[in-house]
Length: 116
Image 1 (tube, helix red, strand yellow):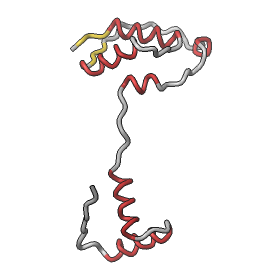
Image 2 (image 1 turned 135 degrees about the vertical axis):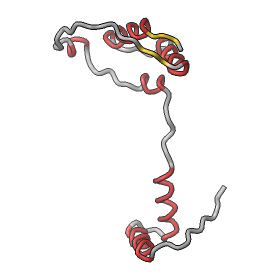
Image 3 (image 1 turned 90 degrees about the horizontal axis):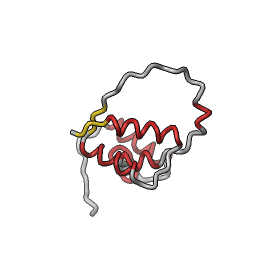
Image 4 (image 1 turned 30 degrees about the vertical axis):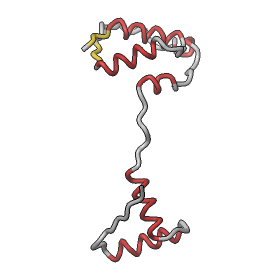
């Protein structure tokens, strides 16, 4: 549904700059104004944790990462919201196929998760 929008009391300098920019893009000042508003206010659709994790590329073989020093690890505590825990569970139970290193890290993290 299209709606008209009127902007009053705009400085003349801004109007001139808008018209110049519109001309450089081959548009009317009104079309340029719509494009500026659209670009400033339209945000991309947010993705769930499961979508982000499943879109991650395979970063290499486990051997590529074995050069790191052995670090004494302390037990870590992770607290997830119900929503994030559900997303993690969905990823772990989905056809998502992480490489062995990531799979081990995810299993270790899942074992330490405290449900809230």
